[in-house]
Length: 361
Image 1: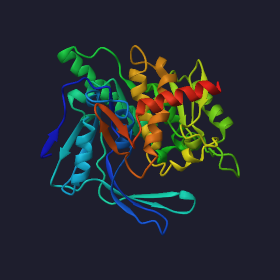
Image 2: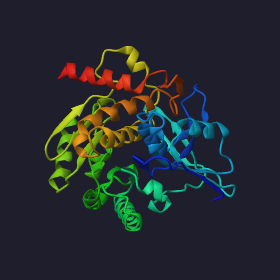
Image 3: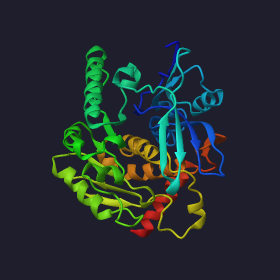
Image 4: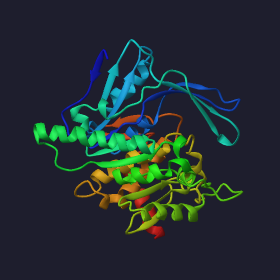
């Protein structure tokens, strides 16, 4: 690589090994296509963590961006504005990873890469990023095991050299959709031994068991099935948390001690028409959810822990709400020392959401 930029002045709370992609999105006519949109699971996960990280805490959010010779200046400016510990690796010898997204009937999305993808691994982590308190991984079950093994090995080496790493990181695994299939279920059970949180959506969870995540003949999430299959994973010795992202139905979390449903910030059952109209594009909502979840697990209590899960789920839901209000990333503006994303204060939205949920309990 020709160049690399990374901040080193603050400990890292969150790192994603998801990819950065520049998207080209084609909608159903007559809506025109859009180009040069920041996309990729890594970008949205980083957004989810960054939303709750006012500067200088913004530099506790780590992610990796591989910028090719075609890297747009406006995207470079967005990354600069976020002020994160982004490892920006520059190369004039390749193109940036780009993808085509097409929306058809029923908002079903088709996806294909337009340029060669550059997948990330633990070997791409700098010592600074490797010390993170949490990691977001989006991959197959077997690759999850490889990545966690590699991260732990790298941290052991750093600890032996510098003795600066005390606590094991929180590991959040997002199963890659294409390999949520029955043939991978046993590998999935093995991968669960390596992580703290597994975060599929309802369809991905069901697909591991050869089932559908929706009620038959309906657009409603099959809540009973989600609960049943989550118990199945926990019954196989998983000691962490199953967090199922269910889109407009919210999310379901289950551990060996407790379980609960939490509605989406933009609640599908709400009568608030204005709120419903705010949802523009669900792309990236699930990734942002898991980035928000991770940072909530790290900061939602006295120390990073799954004991912070209930609080972290609220952070996750709010993070997802900002991701789906537009095509691409929300806009960041400043009012003095305050940040506003799409004109809203993140913590005010979190307080409002928390208050709303307490009223319904």
